Length: 85
Image (tube, rainbow, N blue to C red):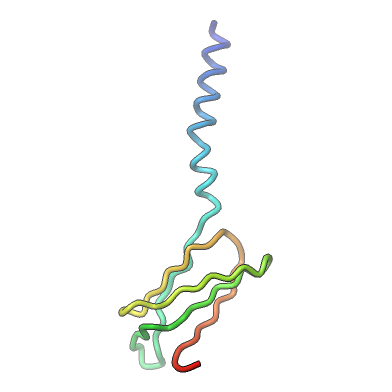
């Protein structure tokens, strides 16, 4: 009887940890884009490239110059572009 209780408790504990494991793979790249005088730059396109897979994600700075890009955990290279293309 006690073994069955312990087995059930371990099973329920393992199920409770599954969402934590899933969340561990997500991250956010965030920052503020400014010019050399410290003024914020809205409307700047930020491109994040995952170095291992080559996957690309894009974000645009808001009115405060802030960008947020939800990504997976890993090493990323970021580039910025603004103005006319």
